[in-house]
Amino acid sequence: MRRVRRSFVPVMSPAAVRRRARRWAALAGAALVSPYAALIPAAAGWLPPEFAVVLALVAVPTGLLILSETCKERPPLRASWPHLTARTLTGERTVDLSVISTVRLLTYFSRSGVSERVLLVRDVNGVCLGLKSAVGRAALRRALERSSSHPQPRVSRAALVHLGIVTSRSPLVLHTVVSWLVTVLGICGYIVTVLALADRVPT
Image (cartoon, rainbow, N blue to C red; front, side):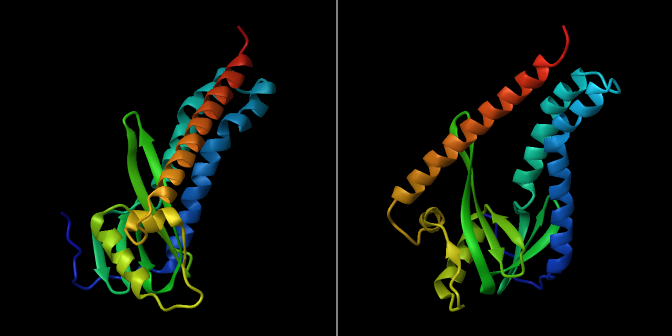
């Protein structure tokens, strides 16, 4: 099991982290809307109609991947209370566990079922970090149990169950079902979009 490094941990500037996150979010957003944006020059004859379909098949999954991976921790996770620092897709970021604003659970699926659960932690500085490791979960649980800040952090019931703070499994089951339905509907919407764009391609 990975261990938290207790040595000196550099604290990343929240402002710099937010700027990097905004740039990557803008890139992901541009990828998601690019198939629709390509319809305008395609209608004017500047681009082949097939180009929008290609963008839907390539750019949209890329944009979704960027959005899902932006905040996730990558080893090594470094801790020096009250800070947790980890590498992410957008570079290193530090979350302050003494001033947590919100905690929510994200669930991802594969063919075999639930593939990953990520605890998305946001502090009052606006920095988000997705905790996946057992070490990160343990640090977050200790922070929530000792929290004396006002107002108290807003923590979803599913996140509390995943952390072992709440014993009832019902919130986690409900969260998993809703997340699965949203995933299925999103996939269906993506397929409909690709088919609609393909329908515009002249045969």
